[in-house]
Image (tube, rainbow, N blue to C red):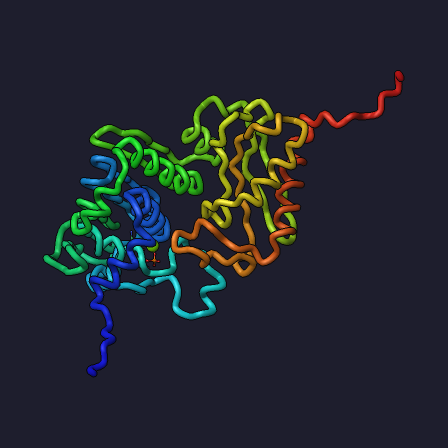
Length: 339
Ligand code: ADP
Ligand code: MG
Protein backbone atom coordinates (compact mmCIF):
# COMPACT_ATOMS: atom_id res chain seq x y z
CA UNK A 1 0.00 0.00 0.00
CA UNK A 2 1.36 3.48 -0.86
CA UNK A 3 1.52 6.16 1.86
CA UNK A 4 -1.59 8.28 1.82
CA UNK A 5 -0.92 11.60 3.60
CA UNK A 6 -0.30 14.78 1.60
CA UNK A 7 0.30 18.36 2.71
CA UNK A 8 -2.57 20.51 1.48
CA UNK A 9 -1.63 23.20 -1.04
CA UNK A 10 -1.61 26.75 0.42
CA UNK A 11 -4.79 27.89 -1.26
CA UNK A 12 -6.77 25.01 0.26
CA UNK A 13 -5.16 25.42 3.68
CA UNK A 14 -5.92 29.15 3.56
CA UNK A 15 -9.51 28.56 2.60
CA UNK A 16 -10.01 26.17 5.51
CA UNK A 17 -8.36 28.58 7.95
CA UNK A 18 -10.41 31.46 6.55
CA UNK A 19 -13.55 29.81 7.85
CA UNK A 20 -12.57 30.78 11.37
CA UNK A 21 -11.31 34.29 10.71
CA UNK A 22 -13.67 35.53 7.98
CA UNK A 23 -17.21 34.45 8.67
CA UNK A 24 -19.03 37.39 7.12
CA UNK A 25 -18.27 40.85 5.70
CA UNK A 26 -18.10 42.32 9.21
CA UNK A 27 -15.17 40.01 10.10
CA UNK A 28 -13.18 41.56 7.25
CA UNK A 29 -14.14 45.04 8.48
CA UNK A 30 -12.63 44.26 11.87
CA UNK A 31 -9.41 42.81 10.43
CA UNK A 32 -8.85 45.56 7.86
CA UNK A 33 -9.62 48.41 10.26
CA UNK A 34 -7.29 46.91 12.87
CA UNK A 35 -4.52 46.62 10.30
CA UNK A 36 -4.95 50.30 9.44
CA UNK A 37 -4.79 51.22 13.13
CA UNK A 38 -1.65 49.11 13.58
CA UNK A 39 -0.13 50.89 10.56
CA UNK A 40 -0.35 54.16 12.49
CA UNK A 41 -3.01 55.75 10.27
CA UNK A 42 -4.61 59.03 11.36
CA UNK A 43 -7.38 58.72 8.79
CA UNK A 44 -9.27 55.53 7.91
CA UNK A 45 -12.08 55.21 5.39
CA UNK A 46 -14.41 52.24 5.17
CA UNK A 47 -16.30 51.93 1.88
CA UNK A 48 -19.09 49.37 1.54
CA UNK A 49 -21.24 48.30 -1.41
CA UNK A 50 -24.14 45.85 -0.90
CA UNK A 51 -23.32 45.25 2.75
CA UNK A 52 -19.81 44.15 1.78
CA UNK A 53 -21.02 41.38 -0.51
CA UNK A 54 -19.93 43.29 -3.62
CA UNK A 55 -17.20 45.55 -2.21
CA UNK A 56 -15.58 46.18 1.13
CA UNK A 57 -12.65 48.57 1.05
CA UNK A 58 -10.47 50.16 3.71
CA UNK A 59 -8.25 53.10 2.79
CA UNK A 60 -5.69 54.39 5.28
CA UNK A 61 -2.87 56.93 5.41
CA UNK A 62 -0.64 54.71 7.53
CA UNK A 63 2.87 53.34 7.01
CA UNK A 64 2.21 51.58 3.69
CA UNK A 65 4.19 48.56 2.49
CA UNK A 66 7.22 47.92 0.31
CA UNK A 67 6.75 45.92 -2.88
CA UNK A 68 8.03 42.75 -1.19
CA UNK A 69 5.92 43.26 1.93
CA UNK A 70 2.87 43.84 -0.25
CA UNK A 71 3.29 40.31 -1.59
CA UNK A 72 4.31 38.81 1.73
CA UNK A 73 1.31 40.15 3.62
CA UNK A 74 -0.99 37.62 1.91
CA UNK A 75 1.06 34.61 3.07
CA UNK A 76 -0.30 32.71 6.04
CA UNK A 77 1.52 33.35 9.33
CA UNK A 78 3.22 36.36 7.74
CA UNK A 79 3.32 39.29 10.16
CA UNK A 80 5.51 42.28 11.02
CA UNK A 81 4.06 42.43 14.53
CA UNK A 82 5.75 39.61 16.42
CA UNK A 83 9.04 37.83 15.87
CA UNK A 84 9.55 35.59 18.87
CA UNK A 85 7.55 33.59 21.34
CA UNK A 86 8.31 36.21 24.03
CA UNK A 87 6.63 38.89 21.89
CA UNK A 88 3.43 36.90 22.24
CA UNK A 89 3.26 37.94 25.89
CA UNK A 90 3.76 41.66 25.27
CA UNK A 91 1.33 42.32 22.47
CA UNK A 92 0.64 46.00 21.90
CA UNK A 93 -0.82 45.74 18.39
CA UNK A 94 -4.33 44.68 17.44
CA UNK A 95 -3.03 41.97 15.10
CA UNK A 96 -0.22 39.45 15.45
CA UNK A 97 -1.46 36.12 14.00
CA UNK A 98 -0.67 36.95 10.39
CA UNK A 99 -3.82 35.22 9.22
CA UNK A 100 -6.30 37.88 8.19
CA UNK A 101 -5.02 38.89 4.77
CA UNK A 102 -4.19 35.29 3.81
CA UNK A 103 -7.75 34.34 4.75
CA UNK A 104 -9.32 37.25 2.87
CA UNK A 105 -7.25 36.45 -0.24
CA UNK A 106 -8.54 32.87 -0.10
CA UNK A 107 -12.23 33.77 -0.08
CA UNK A 108 -12.52 36.97 -2.16
CA UNK A 109 -10.96 38.89 -5.02
CA UNK A 110 -8.54 41.36 -3.51
CA UNK A 111 -6.99 44.53 -4.85
CA UNK A 112 -4.22 46.08 -2.80
CA UNK A 113 -2.61 49.45 -3.40
CA UNK A 114 0.10 50.54 -1.02
CA UNK A 115 2.92 53.05 -0.85
CA UNK A 116 5.42 54.04 1.79
CA UNK A 117 6.43 57.70 2.20
CA UNK A 118 10.04 56.86 1.25
CA UNK A 119 9.14 55.17 -2.07
CA UNK A 120 8.50 56.99 -5.33
CA UNK A 121 5.93 54.53 -6.61
CA UNK A 122 3.44 52.31 -4.89
CA UNK A 123 2.47 48.72 -5.60
CA UNK A 124 -0.74 47.40 -7.11
CA UNK A 125 -1.62 43.74 -6.58
CA UNK A 126 -4.63 41.74 -7.68
CA UNK A 127 -5.24 38.40 -6.04
CA UNK A 128 -7.77 35.66 -6.59
CA UNK A 129 -7.88 32.22 -4.95
CA UNK A 130 -4.69 33.14 -3.05
CA UNK A 131 -2.91 33.65 -6.39
CA UNK A 132 -1.37 36.90 -7.64
CA UNK A 133 -3.06 37.71 -10.99
CA UNK A 134 -1.44 41.08 -11.55
CA UNK A 135 1.34 43.17 -10.02
CA UNK A 136 2.57 46.56 -11.17
CA UNK A 137 3.87 49.89 -9.88
CA UNK A 138 1.17 52.47 -9.36
CA UNK A 139 0.93 56.15 -8.44
CA UNK A 140 -1.02 56.30 -5.18
CA UNK A 141 -0.99 58.41 -2.01
CA UNK A 142 1.06 57.19 0.97
CA UNK A 143 -0.78 54.49 2.86
CA UNK A 144 -2.74 51.41 1.95
CA UNK A 145 -6.02 50.59 0.26
CA UNK A 146 -7.34 47.05 0.37
CA UNK A 147 -10.49 46.25 -1.58
CA UNK A 148 -12.22 42.94 -1.05
CA UNK A 149 -14.61 42.12 -3.86
CA UNK A 150 -17.30 39.45 -4.19
CA UNK A 151 -16.74 37.77 -0.84
CA UNK A 152 -17.08 33.96 -1.01
CA UNK A 153 -17.31 34.10 -4.85
CA UNK A 154 -15.49 30.74 -4.82
CA UNK A 155 -17.51 29.15 -1.99
CA UNK A 156 -21.17 29.37 -3.10
CA UNK A 157 -22.43 27.57 0.02
CA UNK A 158 -20.95 30.25 2.27
CA UNK A 159 -22.11 33.07 0.02
CA UNK A 160 -25.66 31.73 0.20
CA UNK A 161 -25.36 31.52 3.94
CA UNK A 162 -24.89 35.31 4.24
CA UNK A 163 -27.85 37.16 5.74
CA UNK A 164 -29.85 39.99 4.18
CA UNK A 165 -28.01 43.22 3.39
CA UNK A 166 -29.71 44.91 6.34
CA UNK A 167 -28.53 42.21 8.75
CA UNK A 168 -24.97 42.10 7.39
CA UNK A 169 -24.85 45.91 7.50
CA UNK A 170 -25.78 45.86 11.20
CA UNK A 171 -22.82 43.56 11.87
CA UNK A 172 -20.57 45.89 9.87
CA UNK A 173 -21.68 48.95 11.83
CA UNK A 174 -21.12 47.03 15.08
CA UNK A 175 -17.52 46.20 14.15
CA UNK A 176 -16.89 49.73 12.87
CA UNK A 177 -18.26 51.13 16.14
CA UNK A 178 -16.05 48.87 18.27
CA UNK A 179 -12.86 49.92 16.51
CA UNK A 180 -13.73 53.61 16.08
CA UNK A 181 -14.74 53.94 19.75
CA UNK A 182 -11.30 52.90 20.86
CA UNK A 183 -9.35 55.39 18.76
CA UNK A 184 -10.86 58.90 19.01
CA UNK A 185 -7.53 60.35 17.82
CA UNK A 186 -8.11 58.73 14.40
CA UNK A 187 -10.58 60.13 11.86
CA UNK A 188 -12.95 57.44 10.62
CA UNK A 189 -15.58 57.52 7.88
CA UNK A 190 -18.06 54.88 6.80
CA UNK A 191 -19.74 55.08 3.41
CA UNK A 192 -22.35 52.58 2.28
CA UNK A 193 -23.66 52.49 -1.30
CA UNK A 194 -22.35 56.02 -1.81
CA UNK A 195 -24.00 57.43 1.30
CA UNK A 196 -21.86 58.59 4.20
CA UNK A 197 -23.16 57.00 7.41
CA UNK A 198 -20.41 58.20 9.75
CA UNK A 199 -17.87 60.98 9.67
CA UNK A 200 -16.02 60.87 12.97
CA UNK A 201 -13.71 63.82 13.46
CA UNK A 202 -10.75 63.51 15.78
CA UNK A 203 -11.82 64.48 19.29
CA UNK A 204 -12.22 63.36 22.88
CA UNK A 205 -13.41 59.92 23.92
CA UNK A 206 -16.66 61.47 25.12
CA UNK A 207 -17.28 63.10 21.74
CA UNK A 208 -16.53 59.81 19.98
CA UNK A 209 -18.89 57.83 22.21
CA UNK A 210 -21.70 60.31 21.69
CA UNK A 211 -21.11 60.45 17.91
CA UNK A 212 -21.33 56.68 17.73
CA UNK A 213 -24.06 55.89 20.26
CA UNK A 214 -26.23 58.98 20.04
CA UNK A 215 -26.44 62.53 21.33
CA UNK A 216 -29.01 61.56 23.93
CA UNK A 217 -26.14 60.17 26.03
CA UNK A 218 -24.33 63.50 26.18
CA UNK A 219 -25.79 64.56 29.55
CA UNK A 220 -26.53 61.03 30.71
CA UNK A 221 -23.07 59.55 31.30
CA UNK A 222 -20.81 59.81 34.32
CA UNK A 223 -17.06 59.56 34.05
CA UNK A 224 -15.36 56.46 35.37
CA UNK A 225 -11.72 56.82 36.29
CA UNK A 226 -9.76 54.71 38.73
CA UNK A 227 -6.02 54.15 38.55
CA UNK A 228 -4.39 51.40 40.55
CA UNK A 229 -0.98 49.76 40.46
CA UNK A 230 -2.50 46.74 38.75
CA UNK A 231 -4.70 48.37 36.13
CA UNK A 232 -6.35 51.60 35.02
CA UNK A 233 -10.04 51.88 34.29
CA UNK A 234 -11.60 54.80 32.47
CA UNK A 235 -14.61 55.61 30.37
CA UNK A 236 -18.27 56.29 30.95
CA UNK A 237 -21.17 54.61 32.60
CA UNK A 238 -24.78 55.63 32.06
CA UNK A 239 -26.81 57.36 34.73
CA UNK A 240 -29.31 54.86 36.14
CA UNK A 241 -32.03 56.36 33.91
CA UNK A 242 -30.21 55.04 30.80
CA UNK A 243 -31.01 51.47 31.81
CA UNK A 244 -33.09 49.80 29.11
CA UNK A 245 -34.98 46.55 28.86
CA UNK A 246 -32.71 45.39 26.08
CA UNK A 247 -29.00 44.86 26.31
CA UNK A 248 -27.46 47.33 23.93
CA UNK A 249 -24.82 49.93 24.43
CA UNK A 250 -22.39 48.01 26.62
CA UNK A 251 -18.71 48.00 25.70
CA UNK A 252 -15.59 46.65 27.34
CA UNK A 253 -12.14 47.27 25.92
CA UNK A 254 -8.96 45.76 27.24
CA UNK A 255 -5.84 47.54 25.99
CA UNK A 256 -8.04 49.10 23.28
CA UNK A 257 -9.37 45.75 22.12
CA UNK A 258 -13.15 45.24 22.27
CA UNK A 259 -13.96 42.15 24.30
CA UNK A 260 -17.05 40.25 25.36
CA UNK A 261 -17.14 39.26 28.99
CA UNK A 262 -20.25 38.10 30.80
CA UNK A 263 -18.11 37.99 33.94
CA UNK A 264 -17.10 41.67 33.85
CA UNK A 265 -20.60 42.67 32.78
CA UNK A 266 -21.75 41.09 36.00
CA UNK A 267 -19.28 43.26 37.92
CA UNK A 268 -20.86 46.39 36.42
CA UNK A 269 -24.39 45.17 37.08
CA UNK A 270 -23.41 44.55 40.66
CA UNK A 271 -22.22 48.13 40.99
CA UNK A 272 -25.67 49.41 39.98
CA UNK A 273 -27.40 47.11 42.46
CA UNK A 274 -30.64 48.70 43.64
CA UNK A 275 -30.25 51.78 41.42
CA UNK A 276 -31.91 50.06 38.45
CA UNK A 277 -34.49 47.28 38.06
CA UNK A 278 -32.73 43.94 38.00
CA UNK A 279 -34.02 43.10 34.50
CA UNK A 280 -32.64 46.24 32.86
CA UNK A 281 -29.31 47.12 31.29
CA UNK A 282 -27.38 50.39 31.70
CA UNK A 283 -25.06 51.75 29.00
CA UNK A 284 -21.35 51.68 29.63
CA UNK A 285 -18.12 52.14 27.70
CA UNK A 286 -15.22 51.01 29.84
CA UNK A 287 -11.55 50.81 28.99
CA UNK A 288 -9.19 48.66 31.02
CA UNK A 289 -5.47 49.27 30.66
CA UNK A 290 -3.40 46.43 32.00
CA UNK A 291 0.07 44.99 31.57
CA UNK A 292 -0.20 42.79 28.43
CA UNK A 293 1.49 40.02 30.41
CA UNK A 294 -1.62 39.84 32.57
CA UNK A 295 -3.88 38.90 29.64
CA UNK A 296 -3.95 36.20 27.02
CA UNK A 297 -5.63 37.44 23.84
CA UNK A 298 -4.64 34.35 21.91
CA UNK A 299 -7.66 32.32 23.00
CA UNK A 300 -9.73 32.67 19.83
CA UNK A 301 -8.99 33.79 16.24
CA UNK A 302 -11.20 36.88 16.54
CA UNK A 303 -9.58 37.81 19.89
CA UNK A 304 -12.93 38.83 21.37
CA UNK A 305 -12.51 36.38 24.20
CA UNK A 306 -9.52 36.92 26.41
CA UNK A 307 -8.17 35.36 29.57
CA UNK A 308 -7.04 37.40 32.54
CA UNK A 309 -4.23 36.09 34.66
CA UNK A 310 -6.25 37.10 37.73
CA UNK A 311 -9.90 37.47 36.79
CA UNK A 312 -11.12 38.11 40.33
CA UNK A 313 -8.97 41.19 40.85
CA UNK A 314 -10.18 42.67 37.57
CA UNK A 315 -13.77 41.98 38.60
CA UNK A 316 -13.27 43.72 41.94
CA UNK A 317 -11.61 46.77 40.36
CA UNK A 318 -14.30 47.15 37.70
CA UNK A 319 -17.06 46.93 40.26
CA UNK A 320 -15.34 49.41 42.58
CA UNK A 321 -14.63 51.91 39.78
CA UNK A 322 -18.22 51.91 38.55
CA UNK A 323 -19.60 52.07 42.09
CA UNK A 324 -17.35 55.00 42.81
CA UNK A 325 -18.55 56.82 39.68
CA UNK A 326 -22.17 56.18 40.62
CA UNK A 327 -21.84 57.20 44.29
CA UNK A 328 -24.00 60.28 43.70
CA UNK A 329 -26.94 58.09 42.70
CA UNK A 330 -26.64 55.66 45.58
CA UNK A 331 -29.81 55.25 47.58
CA UNK A 332 -28.21 53.14 50.25
CA UNK A 333 -29.99 54.17 53.48
CA UNK A 334 -28.09 56.76 55.51
CA UNK A 335 -28.62 57.50 59.21
CA UNK A 336 -31.59 59.78 59.75
CA UNK A 337 -31.21 61.71 62.99
CA UNK A 338 -34.80 62.99 62.96
CA UNK A 339 -36.16 59.57 63.80
P1 ADP B 1 -1.39 40.63 11.36
O1 ADP B 1 -2.18 41.89 11.43
O2 ADP B 1 -1.81 39.64 12.38
O3 ADP B 1 0.09 40.87 11.34
P2 ADP B 1 -2.50 40.41 8.67
O4 ADP B 1 -2.72 39.25 7.78
O5 ADP B 1 -3.70 41.19 9.08
O6 ADP B 1 -1.73 39.89 9.96
O7 ADP B 1 -1.47 41.40 8.00
C1 ADP B 1 -0.17 40.91 7.63
C2 ADP B 1 0.87 42.02 7.61
O8 ADP B 1 0.60 42.90 6.53
C3 ADP B 1 0.87 42.90 8.85
O9 ADP B 1 1.68 42.35 9.89
C4 ADP B 1 1.45 44.21 8.30
O10 ADP B 1 2.86 44.18 8.28
C5 ADP B 1 0.97 44.23 6.85
N1 ADP B 1 -0.23 45.09 6.70
C6 ADP B 1 -1.52 44.68 6.66
N2 ADP B 1 -2.36 45.71 6.50
C7 ADP B 1 -1.59 46.82 6.44
C8 ADP B 1 -1.88 48.23 6.30
N3 ADP B 1 -3.13 48.67 6.19
N4 ADP B 1 -0.82 49.08 6.28
C9 ADP B 1 0.45 48.62 6.38
N5 ADP B 1 0.78 47.32 6.52
C10 ADP B 1 -0.23 46.43 6.56
MG1 MG C 1 -4.22 42.00 11.01
